[in-house]
Image (cartoon, rainbow, N blue to C red; front, side, top):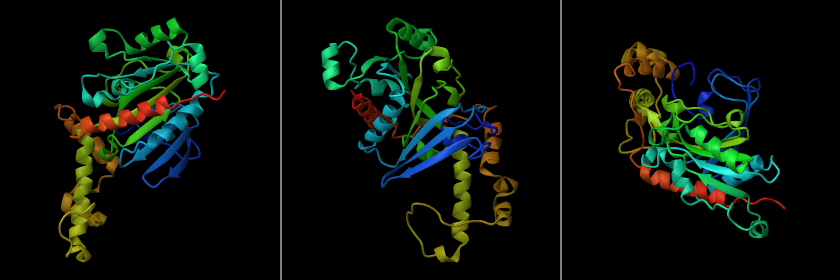
Amino acid sequence: MNKYNTHSDLAKESLELLKEGKHYKRFIEKMDNFSIETYEFLEDTDYLKKGKYIEIFFKESFMSISQHVTRFLKEMIDQNDYPRILIVGLGNPYLTSDAIGPRTLRDIRVTHYLDDGLKLENHYYDILSLTPGVMYQTGVETVEVIQAMVDQFQIDLVIAIDALCARDYQKLGHVIQINNVGIHPGSGIGNHRQAIQEETLGCPVIAIGVPTVIYASSIVRDVFQLMKDYFGDALDIKNKLKIGKRKKYEGELSVSQQQYLLGHVGSLEQEELESLLYEIMTPVDRNFVMSDKQIDETVEKVSAILSKALNDLRYNS
């Protein structure tokens, strides 16, 4: 959570108070259809732990993205010597926007029960999986269920997959975030559960997350920005002949024009505006948590990418 009370589980959207070079390092890799941004946080902050965060942003759900997910996972996994891995699908399997974890595990190849010779021949990691459900279904904290599995099977590494909350609607279902510090289930929507991380489980944790929900205040903030762009576009004489649909408005308002058309609210910075909207909407229970109308299709496509990435993992002999 950041200083504006806005909600996001994504590293890139939580950088307002941090300085590049002092608090974190950033590396950007651009492809034709997607981009990869890596953030290495040099110290713990109020809302991000020290460690590596990788965000893969894509406009279309291409299966080729899975090879990059596999690459980054393998780099993190191989910090351990042939670990026994527990893959955990967090979330409610009966709620589509929260089902990215359980849906991914539906197609996972588990190998723990296989003969050691077969695992050696195929370079398989020793993998178990778990879908612990949510607390209102089990009555047990998720971390306690995972801890029991870790202790019982002497797990060396946990990979947790969960749905996330974003501040930018364009990122819903279009970002895969990987980190090596763990996750706080439900933190993006204020439903704080115990952290799933090395400090609580006693073994390293890799977290994979996909944003599937957004707060209404974040959407209203984007509508205000759209209004500014629209008015700026309409007042620009070069755009008078433009008609029909377009990808975006290209105009820009001056500060005085913003204040004239939208009043004092129109001159607020994006973060200040969202903080105001949060303050207005939350007390009257109007700051709904929302998902995209195509969430069913999105979850199916992205979970297929993740399951393929996990199934393609092989260790080097």
